[in-house]
Length: 404
Image (tube, rainbow, N blue to C red; front, side):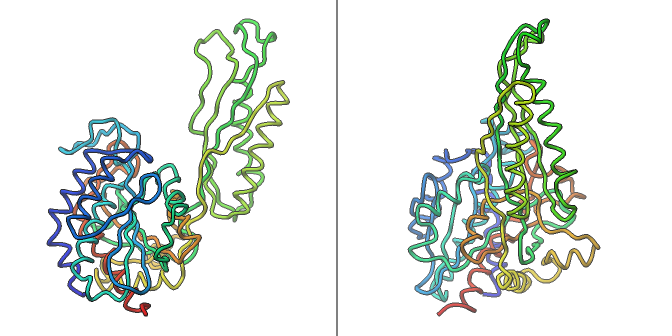
């Protein structure tokens, strides 16, 4: 089992092939027909029996009777036009700008390794290939359709690649116990006014003016209604309304997102957004309706699993490529909690012991200067075999220590 990294490194070219095919053919949300077919074909070639799960998910089992450890990779891309200067870049208007193509390729690599060691495994590994992570819908959909049952999942692990890191590719950072990714909520505020000619504002109700007051007022939640110990981000990312400079439109729509690390803070901000939007609109003779469109809870890392993952990953990668968040904090003097980006693996972490591992896949000094979701972001494929080894080795070692 100690040679798993060496085995993964031998599959490097194959992993790059998986990744580049998926990268060149990105699909979004639940509309993953080509990606899903590709993943299932590769699994079948390895001797797996993949099954559909939910709207566009795929699951497969490797191993023998006993406890079940689940490994998760997401498959969906972003609706972003790619600008990265790579020969295999996407040309269809979508882009794997968050590294999900890397995750899928790494889990396919782990599947090959696990099949090679299937007879010696002390339990089962469930492979989870998930759609719609970017919209925070895919994980919940798969759970609703039996993901965590038949067989029952006892523990779960996910890996997320990170570009623009100060570490060499293939370096792992293990999340500390507790929350490592915030809850996310997307909201939309529709402001109804009364359109009129721009020269006669007294004849209408101006939804543009109302939206300006609402946006300004919402920023006061952080500065005046939350304690210093309650970190949160409230961002307005979209305003739509009007089509002519001399016309006051009938309505305006605002779109935004909230990120919170605490459930009570999350509930409080959502309540205040509704109160502020409705009250402000009423003040200026308009009407506002707030709608929450999608979201996910906080991602919680299990204490015991965090300790196990750090131990197992160090065994396979060595201390020079394995760090915990606590160790990095001690080295840097910072107090990082985890990522500020949300992650719908959170739904799984709320139900079974789970752990999130970050994998460096783009060293800044080597030119990987753009971060996740940027149209020019690139990921270092040198990280792929390390990710496959982390997936496979953590699952096998956990089963060895916890199997019946």
